[in-house]
Image (tube, rainbow, N blue to C red; front, side):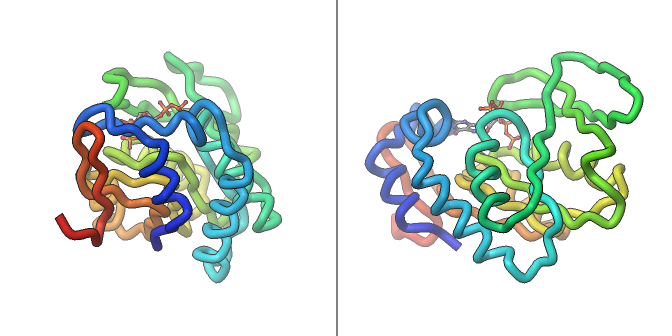
Length: 195
Ligand code: G4P
């Protein structure tokens, strides 16, 4: 379900650096428009209201703002998965390696098991969905903790990269508030728009 307010903001302020990277640091990744984040939280609440969600999960750092507003709107706890450069093997902690194609490097995604309990129904919220590596890393940890992924919400999806399709093929529900079909320098085309 695409969100016009967000699509318009991306058109006004977003910059396609090249065919792969969209810069939105005036309202999402560096400076944060909290009013817009609140609207995003409301939209995710609307989309996932009937999914029996018990907890919101995100990955540090740019996922935190939209995820916090979603948690606030839904009246649910927010849990932030942490990133470390190498394994820590701490007791009571689960970890998994994730490879970032954008940064061309791996990192360890970790979570304390006390913040996800068996039976939890998790809504995973993040800022970008590209190759889906971060999302699949989160899924591994949530499922290892005995909880279930009830949905995935991304503020911006780049559908020309494989993440969304791979997640949907694996059976997960994915909702993107802005779904980019094609990008080139200073050109953005959303899914559903004519070429
Ligand atoms: P993936 O998880 O979907 O496979 O994506 P990838 O590893 O390639 O993404 C790595 C980082 O780059 C993530 O941020 C992701 O949010 C960000 N990213 C991916 N595509 C874009 C894009 O087009 N524009 C911008 N601005 N960011 C993008 P991160 O490393 O987790 O950093 P943080 O910003 O959350 O701290």
